[in-house]
Image 1: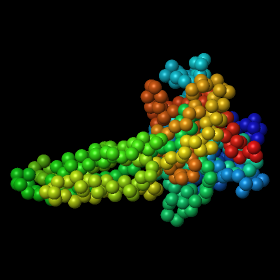
Image 2: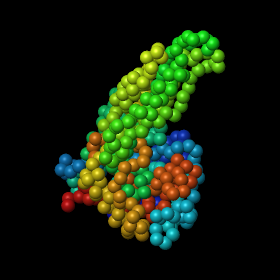
Image 3: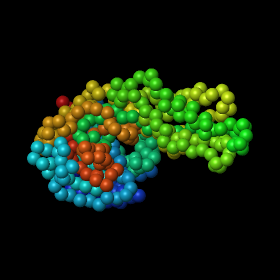
Image 4: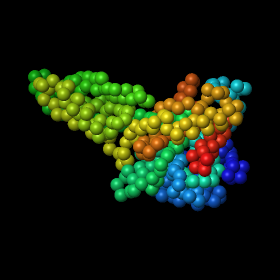
Length: 401
């Protein structure tokens, strides 16, 4: 089925979607998408705490792969109103050879309602000859990803409702195909000593012990092997809290750290390794207890993922992106590259199944932040190119050729 036959216009959809606030509640956006899918005969189901699922099966669903198209409905605060006009000077870089055409601005324009428009276009146009395709939309990727965790059986009492063979995740990638992303963990290093009067040579100073602990943080990845796609991991101390009185040896100090992980490190492995490193760093006379705790959250942390960049899924989407970009007049160097993604995503929950991230727009451009920023925008031609690319990729993956 072509886009014309499905009567779906991704740009018009995006114009409507950006007008719908979804930073505090996704209820209105959720209703909008469910209604749209229903009007197109997709028979959507609402499951897993607000996830939207819709499926198209071929006459022979077991003879081909199960392809899952995933992105999220929520955005970050605050809401930024919709606007459409000719691309501005700071939005034209790499847009096209003749100035760039229009841009759509507003919260969610690129993260991730632009990618959502492209995935909807690909799903609604799909007419698989083999296998099946599932559209899986989650409600809280910008928060705790409880929806995605429930869909994939990673929450207690849930089971994997997807079981996909291949995953295409919609995020702003500049029409590149991203096959890997670092994970993000947060932990607190707790140092516990003994309080005493500052005038006495007594007590065990937890704030002073932070000097050794911070050195352990700084040296934590020394000698670590760089991941072939993602490079080295990164550990950053972000908050230090300790002491309560200016004339007292402090008994407690806490250091919060941000971890950007690479495969195969898990959150549990990171916590254990950091605790060992900090304990080893403390001077023998410190008399300090060490505990490292991951920040409490209901859903698992978004761990790093990596798909072989030579996997057929990556090549199929990259070829489709490049051809679609050329069709709408984008420069030959805009889109179609295979590279890592710059942020943690719900793609983490779908690995180790082959997973790629793809969509129109950018996390940031030469002028600064785009996603999660007041100047969030996406170029109309990129939305059109992304929609065509997803349509072509789905047809290639689920076709009989």
